[in-house]
Image 1 (cartoon, rainbow, N blue to C red):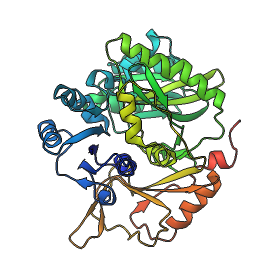
Image 2 (spheres, rainbow, N blue to C red):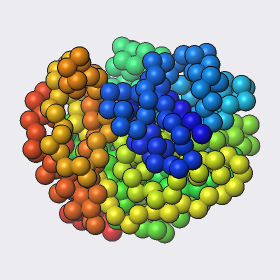
Image 3 (tube, helix red, strand yellow):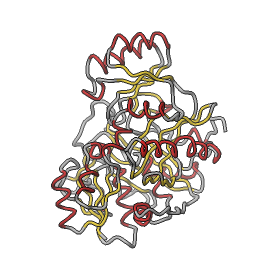
Image 4 (cartoon, one colour):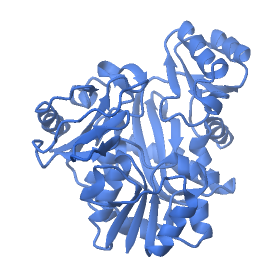
Length: 424
């Protein structure tokens, strides 16, 4: 069959590459894709929000399966539109995707169905939010209710930082309508991990877990980003904890969505934290995580397309996993996640070892075939290893070969696990 992957980032590059390995697939298309995807997909000049053109393309090119990567087209109802046209699509309907589109909706759902998460309140008025922060104290977490490309969450370590954030969100409209409403919640202590699952209604099949690195700079300093690197597996999160998260969070939330007439089909992403009282939810996403997908899918030995088709057919696929570790590092433009320069030439990556996986995100090619920066997060380089330490060494050794002028990347991805700096 022909497969269409919708999106343009590193996550979609990883999906395209995995799909292209399937013997069930004849051709992979990416809409709109990016400059680095030519190794595994044919890019087409249709943007994610152009629903009429995407549907027409799928019909004209005999697309047997469409996989929707990013959250925005899901919340715009693209999966609804494909289903209405009797086109096979993997991704939740708009109603189910609201679990990512509105943090206040997700929190109210968790409260109603007793799914463990941080204590919280929702505000639209600055004075009321400020009073709540003064009452609760710091550290405290402030989240823009809507989508903010992974940048709408602030862990405020002082009252002053919390109040300043509330001013930016509610009074200065930092993220427009997305921050017109905020969720203010307690700060949870513990180790974070990302737990994704293939879902079709109440049928869910978990993926291997990963750990993301949200902060921009080494030592978890700087502002929150869309993610600066990730690794899988996560050795200090036990199988007992993973099982507990499955039973108390993933399973109940998919059942809750069915009861709320928002049945979920696609990838459910749970951003979790392992606290002293067990795993709790930080956030839900309605799609594959980015950059977690770039380190989880390379560990998947099963055929991704076959797994999705079985799931959509009402079956429960069994997924085989490689025991090797994969660790990925994001190269970002200087200034990210705030203002950053575009258009500068990136180093030629031909000298990087072929065993290192390069997933493109914010890149384009000029007339000379040179790669240019076209976004905040530019590339993710990932390497395998028998251990996380091996994988970390393999990727950093290759990145150091090149001059990343106008770019930066964290030098400590995976250190928390490798240095055993956490309680096992």
